Length: 368
Image 1 (cartoon, rainbow, N blue to C red):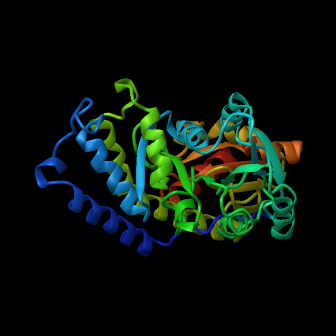
Image 2: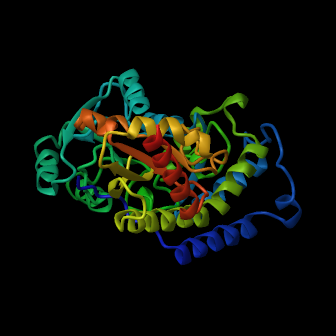
């Protein structure tokens, strides 16, 4: 199986990104504010907590954008608000030929948006679809990570092609599982709005962020008038702490993945046929066994300390390695694959821990 995972930034670049975040923090916060848990309520003139506004400025600076807005509903909420700001019910939206992420599909259905599909892996076809339907398309959604294992598109090139053909059409990117891992999120690559969940960058549950065009973000801000819609100061501060610590953690995780691929393909664990990386949705290690023992490996792994299922897929609660079944899109492509393949996300663990757990699982399966 050939896969095309997104390129992760190296550790040194992740360190510089952390330093960039801290520099932005010191430009927007006083020293005593940094040591607080944040304020509450709808401050007169802001209609949100002061700390929330300052954290939003830090997010904007980190991603070289004019504006950012913290929203409720995690990544799903961020995408929903972005679509609401950019499009009207019943309009046509340009999307990739892969399955639309389920929670995004709910938003599109509720708005009555009409998906127009183009193969993002083929830029010529993408341009042809844009040219043919120029009068219909009112928005575009580009997911940075992969929905299908065979997806190989360069999201930067896809955004550039859409903007070339449809310069007035707003482009929204779903940056979940990519933010702080890649060298540029969607708005840094020319999209109008980037969206992702703070839960996936070590932040709090239920908080998402929209980053990019100030005009579009101001629309969302006005639609979120009620006090209950506001992200409170303590939640914003937690989101900012995740923004600070996630880049280096995620870069180390990427290094561990790369080492695991090398060592497994070198034969360190008997019975492993192949190991490779894929974005499904987060960047994970896929391990294929010579025999159909995947289900037994998954049953054994928790006994040796591996997490058996995700919480938020790379949330602050997930530090032990996760050994889990392959994703639904992979199973749909080949139903037999779940009998011989598993996926592993190292989370905060090192390669030796994962190899030890795998070895113990394989030995137990063989003994049983």
